[in-house]
Length: 69
Image 1 (cartoon, rainbow, N blue to C red):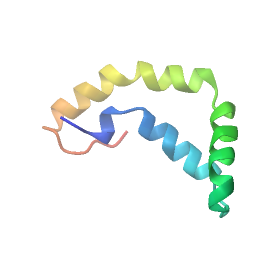
Image 2: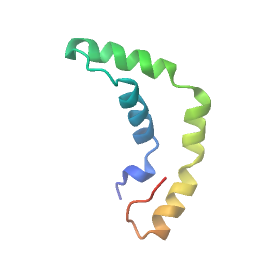
Image 3: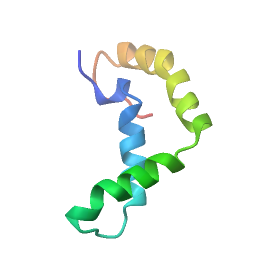
Image 4: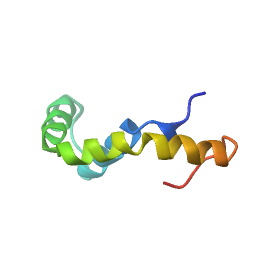
């Protein structure tokens, strides 16, 4: 089953999107995303990874419907 609720990378993409709050030229987009990616803290990624079992349990409890996480 594919569910964005189960994928911590969705949180990382949301973080990156939030950091790209101002419009950027398409040619600068890759550089800006890479710069932001380098700023993502390891403890944030570890926390997201550690949340996977809890996400799975919540998804099972909600019968596959979206969960608020």
